[in-house]
Image (cartoon, rainbow, N blue to C red; front, side, top):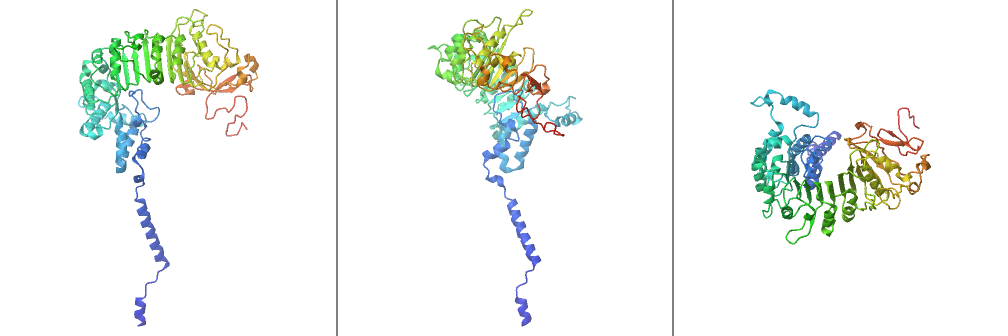
Length: 556
């Protein structure tokens, strides 16, 4: 009986068995926890935002061509490949990633990375050579594959909003491009061959497909030769969502122009170039024609019959005045001395560009300053022929007027300035130390006060390619009261208007990117010394606070 009692008793739990059970339970718990997909709790919008960092150009919704919309760094083909891998990595990511992948398509010719060297050598092998003995056009192959994909899947075709491809491909593959856009019913922008805009016979099929199958086009251009198709737009209902329209060298009358512009109710940007028949009367209010539409961006190039009077008439209406934000005037009938009229009327203007060639000096009569509380960027590019030996070019008087406007603090929101005067940075830098008598050849208005805001000045000569950047700080009240530069010869405390960087045309491009950059430090004699930009710039040009770490800690 005692033996049977032992058999009925429960087994003893040893320390080893307890440890094994605990480990098994912990492993099962970890296994169940690791199998949980945490991304299921993340909304699709958040996943789409995260995946957009894999391929940044997928969010490019601009209406710029393939050449104009290239990213500054990175490889766009590699980014698109990585995004395609994300589509196959997880079913949960397929929807957001696929939408990003097909929204804005780019067909680039080469990889902008080291991978192109390897791929280029592979393409030279026999397997990559066609029956004609010539190397296969890689971009054309990508276009054919993309065409096959969107023609077989209407779901993917409806996702495409823009299609960008190199110039040579869109010129040589017009038929394939026509078959591709015929199924892209939501397409907003596509790179097109040059003959498309001039009604060339070789682009007839492509144009018919785009007009019939793509009603959501937002950007279009009409050039010389397309006057017939342009005049048939009123009443056709074509491209009712068009936002950007470019007209170049068209022989059309003003009534046709007004009727066409009225057909595009969503128009925001208009470019008119070399329209010889267009005058100031195009802005006039008449009962027989619709009004000139309000625009956010207006670009006028080679329009000599458009003057400041006509554009000022357009800006008298509150809807036009409040909508205009970007204005470009290149070789028009609007004179630089009349620019103040337009600037004062356009109360919401943010960006202003004036490019003009002058043959006489700035008028001696009183001309008001350029006054605007909204202009953030100003391109003031005035050029003239070189004067006789020893004589200054007449464009210098126009830059004196601009300098006077800046010193009067009548442009308080201005942050970027572009000028075609390589010495303008020096003039602006030392202007607070001088008594600028404005009763000279420019205007008879009060003396200058100095800058009230930091300014990024980009300057260059007519024969230079790169812009030279100078950062100018605001002028202190003490500096604006100085009577001559000699007062500040010590270079201490008297000037708050010192550049963070100093412009010099002789510097090589390795000192910067698009603009050549340098750093200005005090030289102890009231001047500045340009040194290359390093990882850390001087904290003060007055001699104190500059500290740099080195191997031997020399500067402590």
